[in-house]
Amino acid sequence: MLKVSDIIQIKIDKIVFGGEGLGYYNGFAVFVPMSIPEDELEIEIISVKKTYARGLIKNIIKASPERIDSHKFTFEDFYGCDFAMLKYESQLKYKRLMVEEVMRKIAGLSDIEISDVLASEDIYNYRNKIIEPFSIYNNKIITGFFKRKSHEVFEVDENILNSKLGNRIIKELKEILNKNKISIYDENTHRGLLRNIMIRTNSNNEAMVVLIINFNKITENIKKLLFNLRENIEEIKSIYISLNSKKTNTVIGEKNILIYGEKSIKENINGIEFHISPTSFFQINVKQAKKLYDIAISFFDDIDDKYIVDAYSGTGTIGMIIAKKAKKVYAIEIVKSASEDGEKTAKENGIKNIEFINGAVEKELVKLINNNKKIDIIIFDPPRKGLEASIIDKVAELNLKEVVYISCNPSTFARDIKLFSEKGYVLKKLQAVDMFPQTSHIETVALLSKLDVDKHINVEIKLDELDLTSAESKATYAQIKEYILEKFDLKVSTLYIAQIKKKCGIVLREHYNKSKKEKQVIPQCTPDKEEAIMDALRHFKMI
Image (cartoon, rainbow, N blue to C red; front, side, top):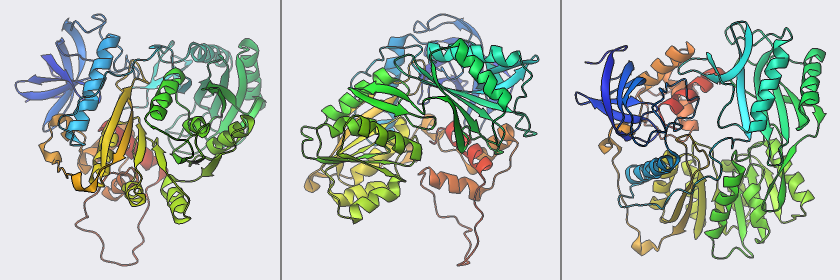
């Protein structure tokens, strides 16, 4: 039986959904980050469960021919770039296979084969949004990424994903901060000033800087340092200070104060200038986003005179592009600043047939339907948790002929496709787009069409029949509690986990010891524990 700290040799057989390599040691499954089929490795076991173990690479005995070189990668080394060791053509191949796998096992489409993943024009330095935490190492202020299962920061000088301008700004900021005595936020004592730095850039090589601090007001010293940063880097067009004194892992504060320049920076997509503010959602790889939206629009035979809902619209990117042809577009977005940016963009670009609705899709879509607003097509672009089942029910009630679904999470996408199929929809078109080179993440865009009810066939898929790669995504409450206690030193109840799972759209079984009291006061999960539970759900690939 394997134990933590064991050193073993293993050969990798496949890459599973989530990007980890899978090999077997005496018949026991072992997952290894940054590993590739045909790699022969010496690894150290870091965790052991009943049905599988995990290990980190200590030495590459024989490298796979798909590996860029035989450099030793560890979990900390790749700072989110979990496919960085793969040749790019191999990255695309495994992303296609991962999408096909979840579509077969979760959506129940056993014979599905998708076309090649649409490659990214830029495979490095494509990210237009950067968020890095501050820390202290050897009496020096650093930024970087959290190491595995900890909040210890792993310093990265030149992140291969970040825009070159973003990397340059962070490097210059650290030099300025290290010349001054500025305290760093300590999440244990909740003291110290600097929490995170966020950089947003655009295709015109312009930048917005957002410094997140643990305070309820701006200090003149911090303003002076940021002005020095602007003097050194003229591409900075906007500077905010975000006030976040909450004892949580939430990055951006509730109050974002502009201290220099414009309220937003602009990005051009398909001839439309979009405003981007600190909290606005915007695709991080703009060149690929243009291709993604073009594909989505190409799915429709005719959108002239159509009434379209852009659900989870962000700043209304695809909605405004479609509005050039459609009769009317309703753009629903929960983040107020994103809706405001969208309204400003529409006004400046003379787009009058788009209406921005600030609120949750689950509520606002129902309002549109109840108010008898005409809807011909809905475009969904939800967060990683996917769609609420209630939304799919509402779409089915509308009896829409076509739905477009854009997703950044293949597993929740596949789950929702299965729910749509149960309501009489068939997956007509599916294209995977590589928005995130050097990572295992993949974006998909799909067209769902209403089936003839007489030709609708129900397919039952039993999740218990899935292999280890799927079983891994069904962590028990005990495993989730263990993970949170180990990483965050927090104890969470089953009730809290259930609340957050429900919030993420994960179907729950009826609790066997549910209270019989009709008016029982049920405690609600606190923000810090919600963040920890969300982290655990992501770790176990449940969202």
